[in-house]
Image (tube, rainbow, N blue to C red; front, side, top):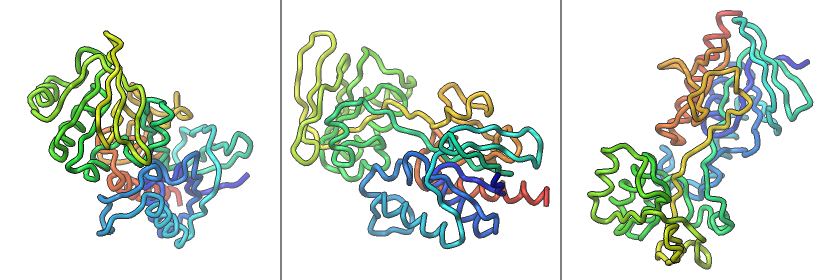
Length: 311
């Protein structure tokens, strides 16, 4: 059975940054790219807020750059998905990982960088316009809609925060809420309801997105009256939550009620020795490429220090 010092699960900014640091420390990391090589960034067209790209960069190109950098130092990037894990409780012991439900490998340290998946409404038109008017991150993509009217779906804190962020950039923000109230905190509710260019439409759901090459309007339905209406908008932001990709770690690692991995404060350490978590899988607050990359660096350094104790 293959034995490795470090296996990285996932290939977004966190995974690749961990790989760059680990490879340079001569840990000879192995990376399994998972279902979505490159992570969530590959669903966005233009990334403008990643430092070092003054002209912006295509999301796929950024991930390709990170991959090339990781491989340049000797990271073994492999296609495949880790489908089962058995983490050891013994410090210095090996963890057992199953690849694509068939092959088993052992790893003395594991960096989990499996990320999170934005929840979408599941409309065919939503998928069609992904990256062309449809976004799950206002902080990432809001700038591209400066001076344009936008619609945002959701009623929680994230939706409220993103609506107030968009209201600074856009003349009109229409917030679609399925219920007759917001789930967001009182302070956020007050901010939303007192912002003049945010209109909240209660008891409203999205029927479909309209447009030729990108979003031009949003067809909505009032859940109480059944009446349908069309809102003109070029941006459609979905803020109904994220699901961390942590199902295979259930019962082995500590998670919050939604499934985000819990790490020791100021580190990337989970409760299993030699298992570290980086990026959106353990971060429900910031969820940015650059913050994910930062924790990827931390995870590699944590793994390097951990391995030094046993060699």
